[in-house]
Length: 248
Image (cartoon, rainbow, N blue to C red; front, side, top):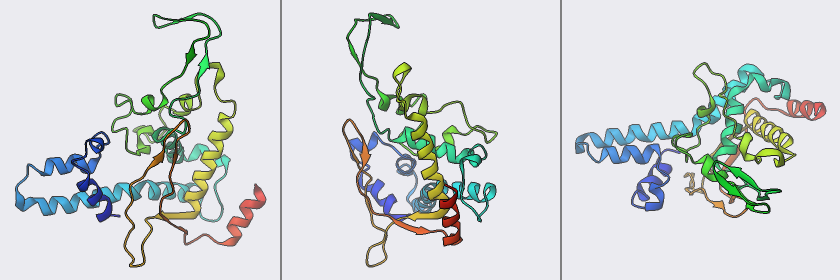
């Protein structure tokens, strides 16, 4: 989790497409180039640790919130949702980070209209750039990174920015199933975090498997299959899962 992602960034520093997806590691590696040689090894090791912490902190912080609010004797329910703001922040960042429908669903104007000075004739096909909204650096700094904290206020509460307001469409023709989709996403994420530990997969020699996350492009955007290790958390046992299934 430390060496593989770090080497990946080093190897792709010269790739122009990679520069468009700049990261904390890449930015600090560029700063490191101006330092004296004697200080570079220490700086490099510190940077590896910082990057590794960023990868695992989201999962650990979320699990800590669940354990403190829900405990370890039962699984989270929708009644706990208001008390789990960081889980909600993860859901929002999941919707924003890699939108499933990056160009939305096209609609046609039912009558002549004017929007911000632009005349839109009746019958005009209109689409909206969801991907552009999610990558707006004025709204989401370091937009290519997965940072749930961007939706958390200084007081620990949630901000007013909810990607569900545009991810599921805009106006009167928004997706009618958006509330079910949002609730299903929350339920899946909070249940996985409460019961599982997810980490890098390892090869036969016990080394972490290196991979670059890739997504299948198109009208619908989804991740390609990737290697990972999934194990149940130490306190999870059959009784907890059975009681949750009965309650559902």
